Length: 277
Image (cartoon, rainbow, N blue to C red; front, side, top):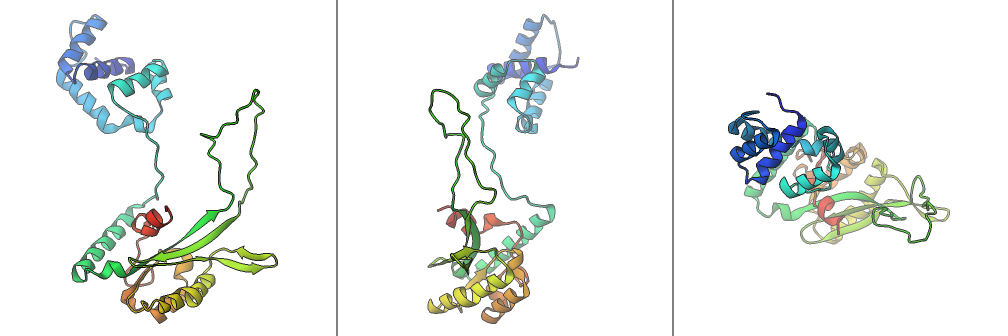
């Protein structure tokens, strides 16, 4: 006997309402439907419930669509999900997409990191973690919790520019100090103007700001310089500067022996700690 969606939903509901008892759920289902047997046995009902749980079907649809498919009111579906299934609404978190080949690269980097840690336990403390970030100067309005209290709806709007003003910042830190922040700017007629990051500008920042400041701190010889694989970071002029001041062993980056895995902001404390302060 095939089950339609409303009957399937009713069986699952009865299953959870009766302390996960498939036998009791089937008995009550047959009473409600006027059946002497069927539509399936207790073992198959248990398997059906486990299949629904493992497939996580609710994560790929909406409450409204489930209600339409089952022919039930939306409020009823919400009550079933909350009170019986114990499901709760959670916000999705957007993360960097990882392609299949990147998993292997990340795994290899992690193994190399752990192997080097066994040889030199002090090694991670000398890593200079670096990154850039954009900071928008206009801020933003969260319309979810921003309300205008007036007697009539004036359909108020807030105009925002297509390209809002922003500053681009480079910063680095190790276990003992923070380096920067440095701003990517050029002098315009009205004063400093934010500019985009290019290989030449990044190389200039290294030569004129980052390297001299590390020399002042007297730590250039022991620093492990880490940078991600952004295109400006791996231009010829940048790698020439890094090779002039650092050894092959003291740089974590593309174009060097110790590769930084692509699409891995979750491995960089700048991304998940420094910029979040």
